[in-house]
Length: 429
Image (cartoon, rainbow, N blue to C red; front, top):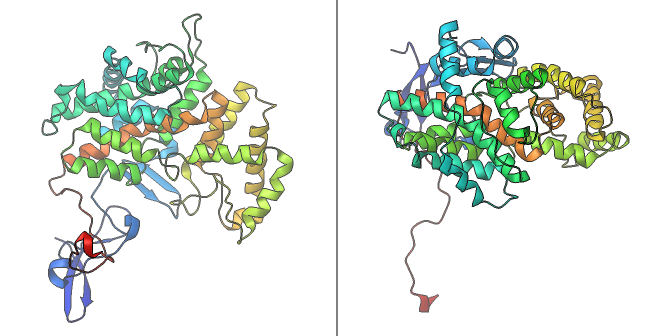
Protein backbone atom coordinates (compact mmCIF):
# COMPACT_ATOMS: atom_id res chain seq x y z
CA UNK A 1 0.00 0.00 0.00
CA UNK A 2 1.33 3.47 -0.85
CA UNK A 3 2.32 5.59 2.16
CA UNK A 4 1.97 8.93 0.33
CA UNK A 5 -1.06 10.48 -1.31
CA UNK A 6 -1.75 13.62 -3.29
CA UNK A 7 -5.01 15.55 -3.53
CA UNK A 8 -6.38 17.13 -6.70
CA UNK A 9 -9.33 19.51 -6.29
CA UNK A 10 -11.49 20.54 -9.27
CA UNK A 11 -14.35 22.85 -8.31
CA UNK A 12 -16.20 21.27 -5.40
CA UNK A 13 -14.85 17.79 -6.17
CA UNK A 14 -11.56 16.33 -5.03
CA UNK A 15 -9.62 13.10 -5.37
CA UNK A 16 -7.06 11.62 -3.01
CA UNK A 17 -4.61 9.84 -5.30
CA UNK A 18 -1.86 7.41 -4.28
CA UNK A 19 1.73 8.47 -4.95
CA UNK A 20 3.90 5.60 -6.14
CA UNK A 21 7.67 5.41 -5.71
CA UNK A 22 10.04 3.43 -7.89
CA UNK A 23 13.51 2.17 -7.01
CA UNK A 24 14.96 5.12 -8.96
CA UNK A 25 13.50 8.28 -10.45
CA UNK A 26 10.68 10.66 -9.50
CA UNK A 27 7.48 9.67 -7.73
CA UNK A 28 4.41 8.96 -9.87
CA UNK A 29 0.81 9.96 -9.09
CA UNK A 30 -1.69 7.18 -9.81
CA UNK A 31 -4.57 9.02 -11.53
CA UNK A 32 -6.60 5.88 -12.26
CA UNK A 33 -9.50 7.09 -10.08
CA UNK A 34 -9.32 10.76 -11.08
CA UNK A 35 -12.11 10.64 -13.66
CA UNK A 36 -14.47 8.71 -11.42
CA UNK A 37 -13.95 11.12 -8.54
CA UNK A 38 -13.88 14.45 -10.41
CA UNK A 39 -15.17 13.82 -13.93
CA UNK A 40 -11.90 15.19 -15.36
CA UNK A 41 -8.97 13.69 -17.29
CA UNK A 42 -5.39 14.88 -17.46
CA UNK A 43 -4.00 16.57 -20.58
CA UNK A 44 -0.44 15.56 -21.49
CA UNK A 45 0.45 15.79 -25.21
CA UNK A 46 3.16 13.28 -26.07
CA UNK A 47 2.73 11.69 -22.60
CA UNK A 48 5.86 13.57 -21.49
CA UNK A 49 4.72 13.61 -17.85
CA UNK A 50 2.84 10.31 -17.81
CA UNK A 51 4.08 6.85 -16.83
CA UNK A 52 2.16 4.29 -18.87
CA UNK A 53 3.57 1.19 -17.18
CA UNK A 54 5.78 -0.28 -14.52
CA UNK A 55 9.08 -1.62 -15.87
CA UNK A 56 12.22 -3.27 -14.53
CA UNK A 57 14.20 -3.10 -17.77
CA UNK A 58 15.74 0.32 -18.43
CA UNK A 59 16.25 3.45 -16.34
CA UNK A 60 17.21 6.87 -17.72
CA UNK A 61 18.11 10.02 -15.80
CA UNK A 62 18.42 12.65 -18.51
CA UNK A 63 19.64 15.38 -16.15
CA UNK A 64 22.52 13.27 -14.88
CA UNK A 65 23.29 11.47 -18.14
CA UNK A 66 22.52 7.99 -16.76
CA UNK A 67 21.34 4.96 -18.74
CA UNK A 68 20.99 1.62 -16.95
CA UNK A 69 19.89 -1.75 -18.28
CA UNK A 70 18.65 -3.92 -15.41
CA UNK A 71 20.87 -1.77 -13.14
CA UNK A 72 24.04 -2.00 -15.25
CA UNK A 73 25.54 1.18 -16.73
CA UNK A 74 25.48 1.30 -20.53
CA UNK A 75 29.19 2.11 -20.79
CA UNK A 76 30.14 -1.01 -18.81
CA UNK A 77 27.92 -3.23 -20.93
CA UNK A 78 29.34 -1.79 -24.15
CA UNK A 79 32.97 -1.89 -23.06
CA UNK A 80 33.08 -5.17 -21.14
CA UNK A 81 30.40 -7.37 -22.73
CA UNK A 82 28.89 -8.03 -26.13
CA UNK A 83 25.51 -7.55 -27.75
CA UNK A 84 24.13 -11.05 -27.15
CA UNK A 85 25.06 -10.78 -23.48
CA UNK A 86 23.04 -7.55 -23.34
CA UNK A 87 20.18 -9.34 -25.13
CA UNK A 88 20.19 -12.05 -22.47
CA UNK A 89 20.25 -9.42 -19.73
CA UNK A 90 17.30 -7.50 -21.16
CA UNK A 91 15.25 -10.66 -21.69
CA UNK A 92 16.00 -12.51 -18.45
CA UNK A 93 16.96 -9.77 -15.98
CA UNK A 94 20.43 -11.04 -15.08
CA UNK A 95 23.79 -11.39 -16.81
CA UNK A 96 24.30 -14.96 -18.05
CA UNK A 97 26.69 -17.50 -16.61
CA UNK A 98 29.27 -18.89 -19.07
CA UNK A 99 27.02 -21.90 -19.70
CA UNK A 100 23.90 -19.77 -20.17
CA UNK A 101 25.79 -17.45 -22.50
CA UNK A 102 27.04 -20.34 -24.65
CA UNK A 103 23.54 -21.85 -24.88
CA UNK A 104 21.97 -18.48 -25.71
CA UNK A 105 24.54 -17.70 -28.42
CA UNK A 106 24.06 -21.18 -29.89
CA UNK A 107 20.27 -20.79 -30.01
CA UNK A 108 20.36 -17.34 -31.62
CA UNK A 109 22.98 -18.41 -34.17
CA UNK A 110 20.91 -21.38 -35.28
CA UNK A 111 17.78 -19.32 -35.84
CA UNK A 112 19.38 -16.80 -38.21
CA UNK A 113 18.07 -18.42 -41.41
CA UNK A 114 14.73 -17.23 -42.74
CA UNK A 115 12.20 -19.39 -44.56
CA UNK A 116 13.36 -19.76 -48.15
CA UNK A 117 9.97 -18.67 -49.50
CA UNK A 118 10.56 -15.25 -47.92
CA UNK A 119 13.13 -14.49 -50.63
CA UNK A 120 10.19 -14.04 -53.01
CA UNK A 121 8.88 -11.19 -50.86
CA UNK A 122 11.86 -9.05 -51.76
CA UNK A 123 11.22 -9.43 -55.46
CA UNK A 124 7.87 -7.73 -54.97
CA UNK A 125 9.55 -4.50 -53.87
CA UNK A 126 11.06 -1.94 -56.19
CA UNK A 127 14.83 -2.02 -56.31
CA UNK A 128 15.03 1.46 -54.81
CA UNK A 129 12.65 0.71 -51.93
CA UNK A 130 13.87 2.06 -48.60
CA UNK A 131 15.22 -0.81 -46.44
CA UNK A 132 12.86 0.18 -43.63
CA UNK A 133 9.85 -0.23 -45.91
CA UNK A 134 11.09 -3.71 -46.76
CA UNK A 135 11.69 -4.57 -43.11
CA UNK A 136 8.23 -3.45 -42.00
CA UNK A 137 6.67 -5.76 -44.58
CA UNK A 138 8.96 -8.75 -44.07
CA UNK A 139 8.93 -8.72 -40.27
CA UNK A 140 5.13 -8.47 -40.23
CA UNK A 141 5.04 -11.41 -42.66
CA UNK A 142 7.00 -13.64 -40.25
CA UNK A 143 3.68 -14.43 -38.56
CA UNK A 144 2.61 -16.13 -41.79
CA UNK A 145 5.58 -18.50 -41.62
CA UNK A 146 5.98 -19.27 -37.93
CA UNK A 147 2.51 -20.19 -36.67
CA UNK A 148 4.03 -22.16 -33.79
CA UNK A 149 5.12 -18.97 -31.99
CA UNK A 150 2.16 -16.60 -32.24
CA UNK A 151 0.16 -17.73 -29.19
CA UNK A 152 0.97 -14.94 -26.73
CA UNK A 153 -0.62 -16.84 -23.83
CA UNK A 154 2.05 -19.56 -24.05
CA UNK A 155 5.34 -18.56 -22.34
CA UNK A 156 7.28 -21.07 -24.44
CA UNK A 157 5.91 -19.67 -27.71
CA UNK A 158 6.64 -16.13 -26.53
CA UNK A 159 10.28 -17.04 -25.97
CA UNK A 160 10.57 -18.89 -29.29
CA UNK A 161 9.21 -15.83 -31.10
CA UNK A 162 11.64 -13.63 -29.18
CA UNK A 163 14.66 -15.70 -30.13
CA UNK A 164 13.55 -15.90 -33.74
CA UNK A 165 13.27 -12.15 -34.12
CA UNK A 166 16.61 -11.40 -32.45
CA UNK A 167 18.23 -13.97 -34.75
CA UNK A 168 16.44 -13.20 -38.02
CA UNK A 169 16.37 -9.39 -37.91
CA UNK A 170 20.01 -9.02 -39.10
CA UNK A 171 19.35 -11.52 -41.90
CA UNK A 172 16.27 -9.61 -43.08
CA UNK A 173 18.10 -6.26 -42.88
CA UNK A 174 21.07 -7.63 -44.83
CA UNK A 175 18.75 -9.11 -47.46
CA UNK A 176 17.03 -5.72 -47.82
CA UNK A 177 20.43 -4.13 -48.40
CA UNK A 178 21.58 -6.74 -50.91
CA UNK A 179 18.32 -6.49 -52.83
CA UNK A 180 18.64 -2.71 -52.97
CA UNK A 181 22.13 -2.81 -54.50
CA UNK A 182 21.38 -5.72 -56.83
CA UNK A 183 23.66 -8.33 -55.28
CA UNK A 184 22.74 -11.94 -54.39
CA UNK A 185 21.69 -12.76 -50.85
CA UNK A 186 24.42 -14.10 -48.57
CA UNK A 187 23.37 -16.77 -46.09
CA UNK A 188 24.48 -16.55 -42.44
CA UNK A 189 27.30 -18.73 -41.11
CA UNK A 190 27.01 -20.50 -37.79
CA UNK A 191 30.69 -20.12 -36.91
CA UNK A 192 30.51 -16.32 -36.82
CA UNK A 193 29.43 -13.96 -34.08
CA UNK A 194 26.35 -11.74 -34.31
CA UNK A 195 28.01 -8.59 -35.67
CA UNK A 196 30.51 -10.49 -37.83
CA UNK A 197 27.70 -12.47 -39.41
CA UNK A 198 25.81 -9.29 -40.21
CA UNK A 199 28.85 -7.65 -41.79
CA UNK A 200 29.46 -10.70 -43.94
CA UNK A 201 25.81 -10.91 -45.04
CA UNK A 202 25.97 -7.24 -46.07
CA UNK A 203 29.37 -7.00 -47.73
CA UNK A 204 30.41 -10.49 -48.91
CA UNK A 205 30.00 -11.55 -52.55
CA UNK A 206 30.05 -15.13 -53.91
CA UNK A 207 33.10 -14.57 -56.10
CA UNK A 208 35.58 -14.03 -53.27
CA UNK A 209 36.14 -14.87 -49.63
CA UNK A 210 35.11 -12.17 -47.16
CA UNK A 211 37.56 -11.40 -44.37
CA UNK A 212 36.11 -10.23 -41.07
CA UNK A 213 37.85 -7.17 -39.66
CA UNK A 214 37.74 -7.67 -35.87
CA UNK A 215 37.96 -3.93 -35.15
CA UNK A 216 34.95 -3.21 -37.35
CA UNK A 217 33.02 -6.20 -36.00
CA UNK A 218 33.67 -5.11 -32.42
CA UNK A 219 32.63 -1.55 -33.25
CA UNK A 220 29.35 -2.70 -34.80
CA UNK A 221 28.66 -4.97 -31.84
CA UNK A 222 29.17 -1.98 -29.55
CA UNK A 223 26.77 0.11 -31.66
CA UNK A 224 24.17 -2.64 -31.25
CA UNK A 225 24.64 -2.60 -27.45
CA UNK A 226 24.27 1.19 -27.30
CA UNK A 227 20.97 1.06 -29.19
CA UNK A 228 19.48 -2.07 -27.58
CA UNK A 229 16.84 -0.31 -25.46
CA UNK A 230 15.94 3.22 -24.40
CA UNK A 231 12.97 2.97 -22.05
CA UNK A 232 9.47 4.09 -23.17
CA UNK A 233 10.43 5.90 -26.38
CA UNK A 234 8.06 6.30 -29.34
CA UNK A 235 8.77 2.95 -31.01
CA UNK A 236 8.78 1.01 -27.73
CA UNK A 237 5.49 2.61 -26.71
CA UNK A 238 4.13 1.66 -30.13
CA UNK A 239 5.16 -1.97 -29.57
CA UNK A 240 3.53 -1.97 -26.14
CA UNK A 241 0.26 -0.44 -27.38
CA UNK A 242 0.10 -2.88 -30.30
CA UNK A 243 0.87 -5.72 -27.91
CA UNK A 244 -1.83 -4.60 -25.47
CA UNK A 245 -4.44 -5.54 -28.09
CA UNK A 246 -3.22 -9.14 -28.12
CA UNK A 247 -1.56 -8.79 -31.53
CA UNK A 248 1.04 -11.43 -32.40
CA UNK A 249 4.66 -10.51 -31.55
CA UNK A 250 5.80 -10.22 -35.17
CA UNK A 251 3.09 -7.66 -35.90
CA UNK A 252 4.04 -5.71 -32.77
CA UNK A 253 7.72 -5.52 -33.76
CA UNK A 254 6.74 -4.51 -37.31
CA UNK A 255 4.78 -1.65 -35.73
CA UNK A 256 7.87 -0.68 -33.76
CA UNK A 257 9.97 -0.64 -36.94
CA UNK A 258 7.40 1.65 -38.59
CA UNK A 259 7.59 4.08 -35.65
CA UNK A 260 11.39 3.95 -35.59
CA UNK A 261 11.45 4.94 -39.26
CA UNK A 262 10.35 8.48 -38.38
CA UNK A 263 13.07 11.13 -38.83
CA UNK A 264 12.44 12.48 -35.31
CA UNK A 265 13.24 9.03 -33.87
CA UNK A 266 15.43 6.42 -35.53
CA UNK A 267 16.17 8.51 -38.60
CA UNK A 268 18.16 11.10 -36.64
CA UNK A 269 21.60 9.80 -37.66
CA UNK A 270 20.51 9.74 -41.30
CA UNK A 271 19.43 13.38 -41.03
CA UNK A 272 22.74 14.21 -39.36
CA UNK A 273 24.64 12.90 -42.42
CA UNK A 274 22.32 14.89 -44.68
CA UNK A 275 23.26 18.01 -42.73
CA UNK A 276 26.96 17.27 -43.15
CA UNK A 277 26.38 16.96 -46.90
CA UNK A 278 24.56 20.28 -46.89
CA UNK A 279 27.53 21.95 -45.19
CA UNK A 280 29.80 20.24 -47.69
CA UNK A 281 33.25 21.56 -46.80
CA UNK A 282 35.07 22.75 -43.69
CA UNK A 283 35.30 26.36 -44.93
CA UNK A 284 31.48 26.58 -44.93
CA UNK A 285 31.13 25.58 -41.27
CA UNK A 286 31.34 29.13 -39.78
CA UNK A 287 28.25 30.29 -41.67
CA UNK A 288 26.24 27.28 -40.46
CA UNK A 289 27.46 27.81 -36.88
CA UNK A 290 26.31 31.42 -37.16
CA UNK A 291 22.91 30.27 -38.41
CA UNK A 292 22.61 27.81 -35.52
CA UNK A 293 23.28 30.63 -33.05
CA UNK A 294 20.77 32.98 -34.71
CA UNK A 295 17.46 32.80 -32.83
CA UNK A 296 15.61 34.02 -35.90
CA UNK A 297 16.99 31.30 -38.18
CA UNK A 298 15.08 27.95 -38.12
CA UNK A 299 18.28 26.03 -39.00
CA UNK A 300 19.41 23.53 -36.37
CA UNK A 301 22.64 21.60 -36.12
CA UNK A 302 21.60 17.95 -36.05
CA UNK A 303 23.45 15.48 -33.84
CA UNK A 304 24.08 17.90 -30.97
CA UNK A 305 22.25 17.81 -27.65
CA UNK A 306 19.46 15.35 -26.89
CA UNK A 307 15.77 15.57 -26.08
CA UNK A 308 16.15 13.31 -23.04
CA UNK A 309 19.74 13.91 -21.92
CA UNK A 310 20.05 17.50 -20.67
CA UNK A 311 23.69 17.07 -19.64
CA UNK A 312 25.36 14.54 -21.93
CA UNK A 313 24.38 11.37 -23.73
CA UNK A 314 26.16 8.53 -21.88
CA UNK A 315 26.20 6.51 -25.11
CA UNK A 316 28.07 9.27 -26.93
CA UNK A 317 31.24 8.74 -24.87
CA UNK A 318 31.50 5.16 -26.08
CA UNK A 319 30.48 6.09 -29.64
CA UNK A 320 33.14 8.83 -29.73
CA UNK A 321 35.84 6.28 -28.94
CA UNK A 322 34.35 3.71 -31.32
CA UNK A 323 34.05 6.25 -34.12
CA UNK A 324 37.71 7.23 -33.96
CA UNK A 325 38.79 3.57 -33.75
CA UNK A 326 36.89 2.84 -36.96
CA UNK A 327 38.19 5.91 -38.77
CA UNK A 328 41.76 4.96 -37.84
CA UNK A 329 41.26 1.33 -38.85
CA UNK A 330 39.75 2.26 -42.21
CA UNK A 331 42.52 4.78 -42.87
CA UNK A 332 40.04 7.40 -44.06
CA UNK A 333 41.85 10.69 -44.60
CA UNK A 334 40.36 12.37 -47.66
CA UNK A 335 36.63 12.35 -47.05
CA UNK A 336 35.17 15.90 -47.01
CA UNK A 337 32.11 14.72 -45.08
CA UNK A 338 34.21 13.27 -42.28
CA UNK A 339 36.43 16.37 -42.27
CA UNK A 340 33.31 18.47 -41.69
CA UNK A 341 32.16 16.13 -38.93
CA UNK A 342 35.47 16.19 -37.10
CA UNK A 343 35.67 20.00 -37.25
CA UNK A 344 32.10 20.31 -35.97
CA UNK A 345 32.99 17.97 -33.12
CA UNK A 346 36.01 20.12 -32.24
CA UNK A 347 33.93 23.30 -32.25
CA UNK A 348 31.12 21.79 -30.17
CA UNK A 349 33.58 20.65 -27.51
CA UNK A 350 35.39 24.01 -27.30
CA UNK A 351 32.91 26.77 -28.23
CA UNK A 352 31.38 28.40 -25.08
CA UNK A 353 28.01 28.66 -26.88
CA UNK A 354 27.77 24.86 -27.16
CA UNK A 355 29.34 24.16 -23.78
CA UNK A 356 27.03 26.51 -21.84
CA UNK A 357 23.96 24.99 -23.50
CA UNK A 358 25.33 21.46 -23.15
CA UNK A 359 24.98 20.87 -26.89
CA UNK A 360 27.47 18.03 -26.99
CA UNK A 361 27.70 15.59 -29.92
CA UNK A 362 25.18 12.83 -29.27
CA UNK A 363 25.09 9.15 -30.20
CA UNK A 364 23.42 9.88 -33.55
CA UNK A 365 26.25 12.20 -34.58
CA UNK A 366 28.94 9.59 -33.98
CA UNK A 367 26.99 6.53 -35.13
CA UNK A 368 26.19 8.12 -38.49
CA UNK A 369 29.85 8.92 -39.14
CA UNK A 370 30.93 5.46 -37.97
CA UNK A 371 28.42 3.55 -40.12
CA UNK A 372 29.36 5.62 -43.16
CA UNK A 373 33.03 4.83 -42.59
CA UNK A 374 32.13 1.12 -42.40
CA UNK A 375 30.57 1.36 -45.86
CA UNK A 376 26.85 1.47 -45.05
CA UNK A 377 24.70 3.89 -47.09
CA UNK A 378 22.59 6.32 -45.08
CA UNK A 379 19.41 4.46 -46.07
CA UNK A 380 20.64 1.52 -43.97
CA UNK A 381 21.29 3.50 -40.78
CA UNK A 382 17.76 3.18 -39.39
CA UNK A 383 17.61 -0.47 -40.45
CA UNK A 384 20.70 -1.15 -38.33
CA UNK A 385 19.03 0.72 -35.48
CA UNK A 386 16.05 -1.65 -35.85
CA UNK A 387 18.34 -4.68 -35.69
CA UNK A 388 19.75 -3.44 -32.38
CA UNK A 389 16.47 -2.22 -30.87
CA UNK A 390 14.60 -5.48 -31.60
CA UNK A 391 15.72 -7.03 -28.32
CA UNK A 392 14.53 -3.98 -26.37
CA UNK A 393 11.15 -4.08 -28.06
CA UNK A 394 10.84 -7.80 -27.34
CA UNK A 395 11.86 -7.45 -23.69
CA UNK A 396 9.36 -4.62 -23.22
CA UNK A 397 6.61 -6.55 -25.07
CA UNK A 398 7.28 -9.66 -23.00
CA UNK A 399 7.22 -7.67 -19.75
CA UNK A 400 3.90 -6.08 -20.76
CA UNK A 401 2.29 -9.43 -21.65
CA UNK A 402 3.32 -10.84 -18.25
CA UNK A 403 2.08 -7.79 -16.29
CA UNK A 404 -1.33 -8.65 -14.72
CA UNK A 405 -2.15 -4.92 -14.37
CA UNK A 406 -1.62 -4.08 -18.04
CA UNK A 407 -4.69 -2.95 -19.98
CA UNK A 408 -5.34 -2.28 -23.63
CA UNK A 409 -3.90 1.10 -24.63
CA UNK A 410 -6.67 3.69 -24.87
CA UNK A 411 -5.54 7.34 -24.44
CA UNK A 412 -8.20 9.96 -23.79
CA UNK A 413 -8.57 13.27 -25.61
CA UNK A 414 -9.54 16.90 -25.17
CA UNK A 415 -12.28 17.33 -27.77
CA UNK A 416 -12.31 20.79 -29.41
CA UNK A 417 -14.51 20.05 -32.46
CA UNK A 418 -18.11 20.94 -33.28
CA UNK A 419 -20.83 20.37 -30.72
CA UNK A 420 -23.88 18.33 -31.74
CA UNK A 421 -25.67 19.70 -34.80
CA UNK A 422 -28.53 18.58 -37.03
CA UNK A 423 -27.99 16.84 -40.36
CA UNK A 424 -29.08 18.77 -43.45
CA UNK A 425 -29.95 16.95 -46.68
CA UNK A 426 -27.71 17.59 -49.68
CA UNK A 427 -30.35 19.71 -51.38
CA UNK A 428 -30.36 22.07 -48.39
CA UNK A 429 -26.58 22.65 -48.29
